[in-house]
Image 1 (cartoon, rainbow, N blue to C red):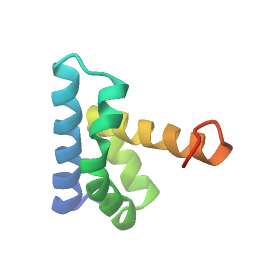
Image 2 (image 1 turned 45 degrees about the horizontal axis):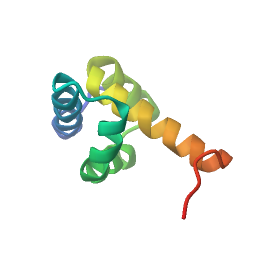
Image 3 (image 1 turned 90 degrees about the vertical axis):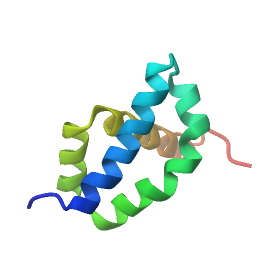
Image 4 (image 1 turned 30 degrees about the vertical axis):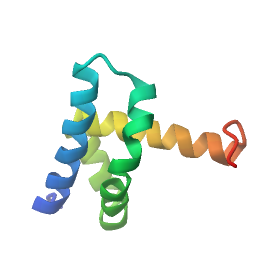
Length: 86
């Protein structure tokens, strides 16, 4: 199924954000600090996209993929207890 304009728009917003941070020499730490502002956009994509569509977005947008991968590692760390949550 083709991606919707809304899915693409949301993914591009995250992709641009990540690429902007990386272009300034930032890395995962800076991405983590700035993630909060992008969480509603990412959540909206999660809620409105299939796993296949999310994979397609990750393949098309490197910055989006990096954000999604970082979110996945963060979620796994919280789930397995290696990242403590207050």
